[in-house]
Amino acid sequence: MKIFAKILLPIIAFTSTSLASGITIKPTGRFDFSSGFINNKGDKAHNKVSVNRDRFGFMSQGKFILNIKHELENNISYGAQISLHTSSRSDRSTPSHLFFESEAGKWEFGSDKSVMTKMKITGYSNASATGGMWDAWVAPDIRDKKIQYVTNAGNFLDTKTRNVDKIEYSRKISYYTPKIAGFQLGVSYVPDTVNGGSGPVRDDAPDYHVSKLVKGYAFDIKDGVALGLTKEHILNDIASIKLSVLSEFGKVAVKTPTKKEFADAIAETPTNPLIDPKSTKFKKLSTYNIGAELKYGKFAISGCYADFRKSLTGSNPLIDPSDRKKSYLYNVGAKYSFEKISMSGHYFYSNNKKNIVEATTFGVDYKLAPGIMPYAEVTAFRAKGAYKVADGLVGSNRSTKYASDNHHGGLFLVGMKLEF
Image (cartoon, rainbow, N blue to C red; front, side, top):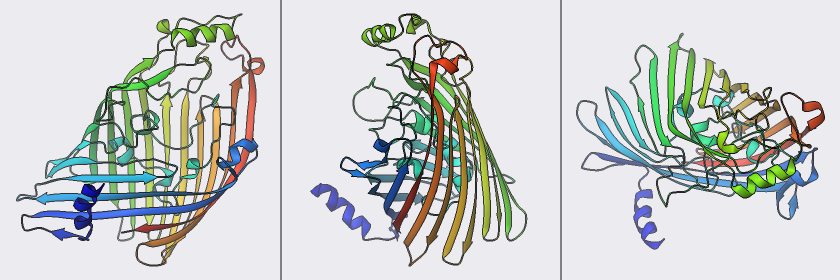
């Protein structure tokens, strides 16, 4: 730590400095502290913010980024972005990467987000306050992870297959073309979503699967590819429109249940034995996202529709019943900025294999001083899904084999951001 401080502190002393060699080092950072009040009417246990505190608690997260860039002749440059991140509750991202940029486009090598995340437009693309961070506080699933809801527009290659104990995203290579007549194309390649870039090879991959009917399944993506296309058109001095179309696909790598897990699962369903996991086939990753954004003066509106199709669903009806394979979401938001104040409202809807989440958020922030912004945000949410209560689930026979899960609640946040 002492060695780290000796290296880091002299760099922080320069807000933005250009060295004699032509290398520019620019440090930036952010710290966000918020207090939240949760009221989940579905289950009192899910109102806990910490072990000994219900409903009310604090969250904080900070990030420090060094942007190092060396500019050469003929509009050629290269450098690196190095990020350090700490969080008390939500480790969303710490992108670090090398980059090479010229008139032919930009290459990125490292753990930055894929083009799917960086190029897509969502309803939260224009947002005040936290910009859709309500799900960092709220856990809509009140059935001990028997249901998996989708609570944000995160994609598979960046978020849905990321190990929770790994802050960084998987390593990847991305390329962005230069903008030509408002068009830009991007592509990312991820050899393995478990490829964290450090430490030994791991097999405790994260599990992303809605039907928690069989324990032990976990999923990763091999040879993952994300493609993105955006088109921006300037209408006049105060108005512009932007469209985005993105897709991701890849091979699924499935970690099947152990012999003990499989034996336990059979014991739980004696009247309808499970199919051997090794004979169950799973669909490849295949998703798309369409978004649009309109800006007019101080007003902005944006939205998106994302379809996960049948990605990672199994052929065994006891794992994924025939009527519970499709997943999609959409959200829309609007923001108005006036001098130092901005206000926004957003609506989010997801249907993840017939497990539904709705969330409506209103936020406001105020630029108190350069780099300091207090904010407030309120979110009302509703979750409606189903979880297995009996064995023998086949096809669409949900009425007798599933118990309903229908609850709602709210979250109120007050916080302060510091940026430099």
